[in-house]
Image (cartoon, rainbow, N blue to C red; front, top):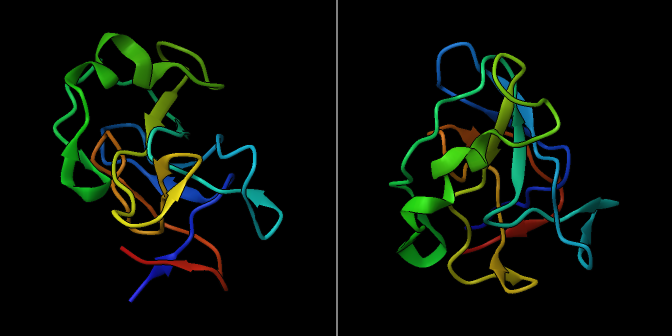
Length: 131
């Protein structure tokens, strides 16, 4: 059974200390779901609270392929609209569908994992994505 499609502005949660609830702020430029850009593996979300220390990715993305360790190293996960140290940062969609691709990237869904270890916690009420 499929999972609700994730879109621009859908909610995420981050388990890192002083982080918490955030929202996806990137998405596909050519695919729209319920008037919102469709989210994909590699799209970013705000991760409020203290900026996270750069981490090595151990997560997998769609189809079980591991993301490169450098995807989150060097602070990439902390670049976002909330800014740098103390002002928040960014998280990255790390897992997605193994069978549905949007603009060549695995589609993100509610329940898919984020780079900091959290999940996407909201999605479309009427569009589901399998795989």
